[in-house]
Every structure is written in C-alpha cells, then in structure tokens.
Amino acid sequence: QRVEKPEMYALLFLLLCSSAMVCGLVVVRPMTRACAFGGIRLPQGLSSTRRSRFSMELLAAQDGGEEEGEERLEINDDWRKFRARLVAAEKGIQMNRNNVSWAYESGGVIEKGAVILGAVGDVPSTIGFGLRQQYFHKSVMLVLEHGGKFTKGIILNRPTLKVLPESMGGFTCWFGGDVQSFNSNRPDYVCLHSLTSLSAQRASMNVIQDISWTTIESAIVLIEQGDAKREDFWVFCGYAGWGPDQLKGELERKSWHMASADSQLLLKEMSRQARNPDLRDAGLGTWQNLMVLIGLGANAKETHNSFADLMLKEWAVENLLEKEADEASAGGAPPLSTQEILKQTTPVDRLIKSANEAAKGSMVGSGSVVAASPTARSPHLLNRQYFHKACVLIIQDDEVASIGVVLNRPSPNGVEITVEGKKIIKPIMFGGEFSMKNSPPLLWLHNSKVLKDLSVGQPLGLSGLLWKCTAQEALKSIEAGKGKVEDFIIVSGVSVWTKGEKGIVRGIQGEIQRGKFQVVGREKLGAAWERILSQKTVGKDSLYRAAARSEDIWRGCIATADELGDQRTETVYKSKVTTTKLADEALRNWVRMFMVGMEKEEREN
Image (cartoon, rainbow, N blue to C red; front, side):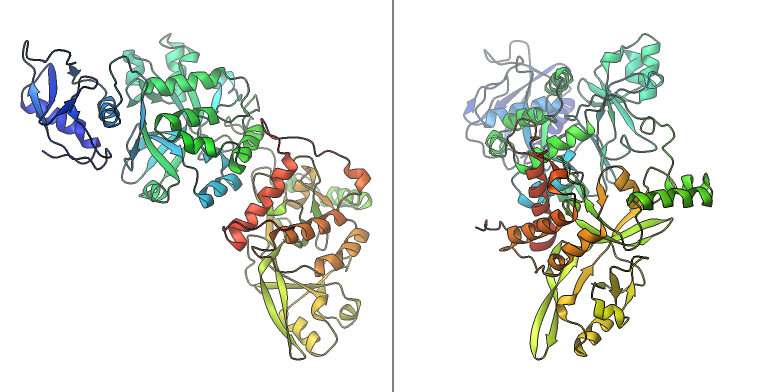
C-alpha cells in the first residue's frame, strides 16, 4: 500500500501485523536502496513526511531471519515514537532505543496527546496575543481531548506560586488556560501524573504513554489511600477550549504549530519549570526548547524579547507570582458587589459618603472627567490599552453601570462639514468599544459659553462645564453662524464599567479606588479643553504625532510634574525596556491593530 499521511504509518503497521498473526516482532525492509535507522530501514531521499510516498514490505520475523544489526520494533511501542523514527530517518538522524526524548512538527494532525506550540512571525496574531490573552503567546499546550465537537488542552509552561488550601490537597497550582480558571466561580482542575498503579489508572484518563490525567478529587483520594504522594501530580487550573473546526481554522491562519513529543521530554520540562524559583520568564524556555527540537529554533531566536515576549512577562508578574489562590478561585464566596453593598447600606449612609467624597474632590458622576493614573507600571498595560494615558468623560453613572467616552483617542475617521463652500474634516474620537441602545451613533460635545447661552444641547451633570448635543443641533448652530466647527468634539462609542450583582466590579468609582484612574479637577479640564478640540485624524503616517498630542492632553489633566515624580525606571524582566515605554508601544500597537491597519508605519522625526 502507498501511504501519504504519517499518522497512518502505525495504523497500517499494526493492521498488517495482525493479519499476519504476528505476536512478537516485525521487521520493516525496504524494496529500494535503504539506510539504517533505529531498526527501521527506509528509502533514501524522502521528501516531507506529510507528502512522502514510498512502498515498504512488512515481513514477519522468524528465528534467525533478521539481518545483522537490524533492531526489532515491539508492537506495543508508543506509535508516536514509531512515527518519530520515520521523521528522523527522513532527516538523516540516527535514532535508537536510547533516544528517549524527541519532538517533531506534525502538520495539521489534531489528536489527543498532540502538543500545540504558539506560532510567531505572523504580525497580526503575534501582536494580537501581545495585547490580549498574553498567556497564549509562545504557549506549549497538551491536547487532553479531541472530537468533532470539542477540543480541550492545557498550557504546560505557565507555572505559578499559587497554593490551593489544604482542603483541596494543598497543591501548587499552575495556570492551565482561560476557561474556568482561577477567577471563575467554578474553576476546573486537571491533575497530570505518570502513576502506573492499578488504582491510579482506574481513576485516570490516559493521554499519551506515561502521562495520564485525573480530577483533583481523585488525586486527593489516591494520596489519602497511600497510592500516591502530593508531588506525583502537576495540578492545572483552567484549560483552553475550541469548538468544531475552530482549532483547524487557527492552524490554517498559522496561529499554532502542531507537534508530537515524547512524554519523557514533557515530564522533564515540567520538572525543570517546577524547580525554577523565578516565574517572570513565563515558561519561554520550554517553548524555545521544543521549537529547537522541531526545527524552528531560528524562528524562536529571531523573536527573543519581542513586544509580545515582554507583554507575556508582564502578564506573568501580575498573574503567576501570587503565592496563595484567593478564596473565590478556590470556590469560596466572592467579594461584595456594588449592588450588594447598596442593599446593606441606607440612603442616608450613601448621602453622607457622597458628601464626604465631594468635599475631597473624589466624587464621580455624570460630567466628571477622569484620567489614567500616572503610575510607573500602567494599570492598562495588559488589556484595554486605549485607556493608557487616556482622559475619559463620564456621561452616565447609576446603580447599574458607569458609562464614559475617551476624549483623546482620535480615529482615522471624520465628519465632513461644509462651511461657506469650504469642506472641513472634523475628526471622530474613539470613545470606547460599546454602543448605547436608542442613542445616536455620534455624540457631539462642546464647552462654548455662546452655545450654552443659546441652549444648544444639555449639560452633563450638575457642574454644567461640558454639554452634549445632537448632530442636528450642532450643524444648525454652525449654519446659523452661532457656533464654529472647532467648538465641537465628536465621539463614537462608549466605555462601560459595570456594577454587577456579583463580583468586585464597582463602576468607575471602583476603578479609581483600585488606582487605575484619578479625578481631573475643573480647572485642569478647562485648560486642556483647547488641546482636546485641536486633535486631528490619525493615520499610518501620523501615529507618533497623534500619540504625542494625546499624551500632552493627558499630562495637562493629571497631577503636576512635582506630584508625578520620577517613577519610570522599572524595567521588564531580563530586558532594558521600561514598563512605561512598553505601555506606550502597546497603545500604538492597539491603534495599529484596531484603527489604522497592521502595515508597519514609518517612524516620524
């Protein structure tokens, strides 16, 4: 038979052996000129494994029938190792039974026990994982389940210092993926092990040779029965999941490399990571080692300390270094939400609290403006990067949510307005990722005393500093000569901070309490308003100029230079890049990714 797909080699091998009533050993002998390799003799000059076509003759081994030096292959050998020998032969690598560690790229083969490696080089996906879901960048995942409707895998190279309570086994728990992970109300735990006892195997699902998985409850029982020790298990919280054909599509978009690897290699890498006391490297060494083994070491070297690498390291600092899993991630009760707090306080208590906050200048409501906090490490580094060095106007705040619009994030789009025969392009600001139902798509804002006296629009909040109006009201005032184009700022989209019934989300006030934003004083906003009005549309050739203008507006709204201090010397682990510079780059990449396009822009003088 002619065989094209490598995953069919072992199947064909076993099928022929079974039909020949072979109970012990088989020998593979080529029909053409052959080269010796690990007991299997194959034709020379094979092309890529996935495209290779060659004939081979399977002969039942008889006493004294093997050629001298020919090694026997046991039928119960791991068939992935059999396939690894074929790949090694193609590459001219001598492999024998002493070669216990191997890995190779398996193309588009998705199967239980396969290894998924994060791909690099494709700019959109690499920068995408740098901006969001950093934990997938250069990840090493093991496929636990694969079927027509669902594929489940766990990340093997994101160890943490988190320790579960003794009631849950006291295990050190690794980050396995973003589905049902540490922050979930129902975290999912997977316990990998290489135990061979009958009790362990009965309580487990085999993944590949020498690696099985079980539930955390079964792991605890095995320990209590004396059939295992705590250190026999690698415990993971969370997993990565794909729906029908989803992973296949991501492979076609070159987001991943599919590989097959020896179980001893994977166990060795996990043991090495467990002994590593510093987790800020985020498992990059394990990914690089496997990339080298599958022949993509040069690719790994070229992307060392790339933008996405640095973002992953910062994600690790924020998520992997906490030593104890919090009560919510261990299945306990989450902190009180805003609505739960409201139920436990009286209107008088809330009124007194609001008065105190107003006296301190920290009360936030409709018409308030907040600015991203000027901390050494941006609170918006890892997600929603458009809030980095942003000024946000709150347009609505109630018991359900706080809603605001970003004022200093110009987009490539604009509104064309004709005044006295002259066409003027008024830029549209990116206000946020959401839209409001039953509201116009564009929000027009102004701070003109003339227009306020003419009641063009309505004030935001009690301060009356900023007013909102409709496009019709704004254009009508311009046509009448009462208003000017430069009096207005146009915003598309809104930002939302919910006040849910569960969890710790508490609107914009909660963001301020956590140090992500600070309230902008009325006098600072008045001084910065002219710069807000002077913004222009952003494009691929004006990215740095737009960023500089936006930062200038932000600096005018935040604390003074003396209050800022010189806090910007913190660098990313094993790099010379400061976290502030990284956050600036993250913001530019966000603009490139979601606004102006991914083509590389030229750095402006």
